[in-house]
Image (cartoon, rainbow, N blue to C red; front, top):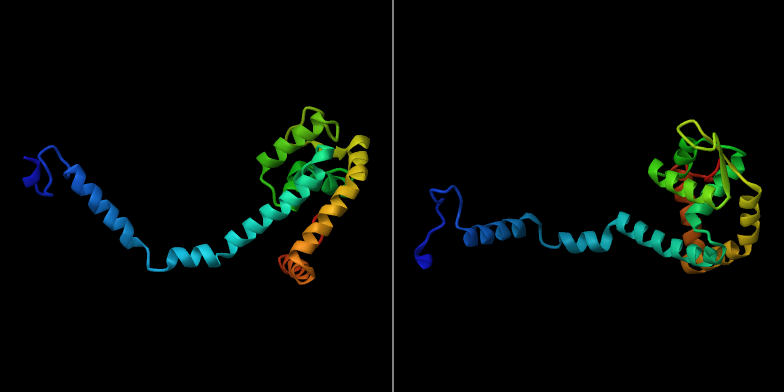
Amino acid sequence: MRGTEDATPRATGGLDSGRSRIYNLAMKRGVTKPGLIDRIASDCIAVRVRLINRVVTAIYDEALRPHGLRVSQGNILVAVARKGEARPGDVCRLLRLEKSTLSRDVEVMKGKGWLESDPPAGGRNQVLRVTPAGLDLLARSQPAWESAQAEAQRLIGDPGVDALRQVAMKLGLGKTAD
């Protein structure tokens, strides 16, 4: 008789499944304080920074797309080009990238002839260099980058750009490829 069952454990070792589900939902609801979800959704700095990053990245990616380049790949090319040659670990530290992310992008860019490595097969101790084709790509994509830069500046505004520079300097992030 289902209607007369109570919430005591059965001999088989569990609560009535219907009642335990209600109990668990009630426990979950009681975990958060009123307004917490709304406060995090509206005030979380990490959320705001990630959303802004996605919007700005999309501006650059759209501008660079005709060149077959993403802004993340362009950043890697610029970082390696500024150093002349660089080990992957150095690029990861410089651009705050995960090794797996850099590795995937490096393989794509090597495949497109924009980067080369010594030894060519890669590995832990490889040295990366931008090829002449990679340097040519950067030169050809400069007008697109300039356009994206101007659009991002218009979107964020001069005070916003200045604030970003100040935060970057405060965090020791000055010029990204120093």
